[in-house]
Figure (cartoon, rainbow, N blue to C red):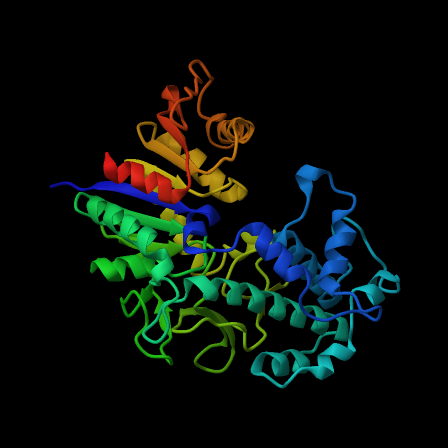
Length: 421
């Protein structure tokens, strides 16, 4: 039997039923964490408010925007070139009062000597750059903590297979199990959890994650599974679970086997709260140093996704979309332009591919706004609209010209309707 190819793209909305934090929750969490300035205000909140103020309601920052600002501050103080990074399109002189509002250099000396802090302190950069590097460590640690609280799964600790998620676990297990018999499940997640790994292990389904040894979850706390780039790029007739933007349990090494600078990403056992323990910085674009982390977030995603294994997984996603029988998009808000472009270009070449989008909308106004966004993000380049008709009914819409369906339901409700049918 020739198997079909079903490509999944999972966004933040796909994790809500497992108690995954929303974008707003992560934003609120990070605003009031970390060091305070001399006036006693959280520095992340000062940065957030300062750069949010001139923006329109549709442009307001979230946690990714906050991370981008901190990264640009780090780049600004790390760079001695005349081509220094700008901050939100504003060149701020190093003597400007802005910096005293958003730094607390004394904070560096109050921290315990963890491996990451020690590496940052020893780095040959300005004290201000060290401060923003440490602030990035704290922000990433906060995100990892929030993800680990609901999405952690290993031999000693399981936050996914708990009583309160019994229903969604059973529904999702039944769903993936039924599809796996006649389709390769090519699952691409923008989330940082291990939910899909838990479900597949529960079902006894094997799936490649981009690392070797080929196990869904490492067996021992000291395990560090290494990237298998060749298999990511060449093996397509198998189930896969790829995290396009990283995972809470991945880690970053800043030294190679010869103790020289050279990054590598591994799949670990526990969540790696300070994943970049060697303070490794990499430039994929000139004069834009990136503080490497186990997750890809902020507004520098295209830079970060040029690194291994993100680059290879993105290439596999591109290939899969070009040859997919169906692309099922769940809980994704179409906020990542590079992801949108991949799907849009693939649909141009793979015109018969069916696309199903599952999302929650609280009212008809949100439904209309989402339909317009999908039309603009995915369909406007494909062909001249001659039959762009979204038929409403039963919380769904269908564009016959493009074989695209939008279903306005939470993931759990969608699963219930699919399994019943």
